[in-house]
Image (cartoon, rainbow over all chains, first blue to last red; front, top):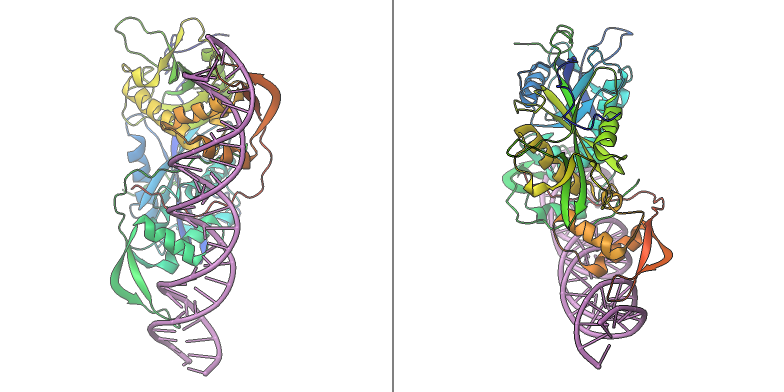
Length: 227
Length: 227
DNA sequence: GAAATAGTGTCTCTTAGACACTATTTC
DNA sequence: GAAATAGTGTCTAAGAGACACTATTTC
């Protein structure tokens, strides 16, 4: 068979149902959590989704879905990719475009929705399970090039809070002095003239995310292939 | 408006046309090239695509499209994401799922197809142009975690060829000694008992891609945010 | 021998992590 | 003062890039 390319028949002959799905992440009780509608007892859980129509741009649809499920605009969002591939979806759609979004720690879940720890959200359908796994990996992998951790924090935060957020998302402990040194030389935060005392211990200075333009970050070649 | 989640209507009410699109890359004459059907004079160029139906898994559809357009199975392939968003597509589809694939240098284009330098493929439609740009960035960004450069080379190659491939994809020169040192300590290649003489100069030893399992690559935290 | 390409040894500078320390608060 | 948390200075080892060199081929 040689359908080689576009010289074949026009598309549109086989219309299919598609959705935009949302993995909206935040942090609660020191765990990564995801927004999901409260499921009835013993029923399948699912992630928020929206039927996609031909007119609306993907980004708008995702933004709209995020706003309506989280009750506020996400502080960061990115497309994860398309999922389909014979995996069942709650909407019965053939294709789903997944977006991962982030809202700051402490954001309340709207009526009918709840924050579920990502590792405790069992009863998901197969396709949405794949998406959730991709989302967790995706957040971790993008932390070095996108302000994921910052967007999960309130506008002002302490460096310890920032480090804890990094540790949570990366899933491992970090070295305090190294963390601060690297942060310093990246010109990403700016101290504000405010301190916060958290019970015992010396009060911590508050910082704000204020990235300064940096020219040409010239990474060296890295060979971290696993395959 | 509060459609909050899946509690709204079932999807499937608004079926739409979708395609799988392929950005199949290789190298020719020291440039990154992409596979495209030969366009008639003055006509729009386009990238290979395939109408997507509800049954076939995305991966299979992409594999099939790649085989039929390149005349062989790609040596590496990954999904780039979904594109739609009000950008026109040659098939008139509402949604396209893009895959970027790689075949080794020197692969001949099948009848009716041709290798076009990525920076010379002007007359693409808006959606496929976005995909092409995403593909080039995607290849570059994945080089450190996936064997993209290796898959663009024949099974055996010299270290100079490998370095040139890295330089081409990264778009910058690399330091020879550093490159080899890093490669060495990554245990990715294996010398074979064969040398190649390329005209003048000392013959180069041939190598094979033979990654050895490495446990826990523990990258340090990096802050390379641009946003 | 000259030119060209392959491949390596050494030096320096940067940086990540370890360690240990100082600083400031509550009890 | 003890305990707890914030924040820093210094040492060491690893790694990247620069430089210069050796090695092996064709002409």
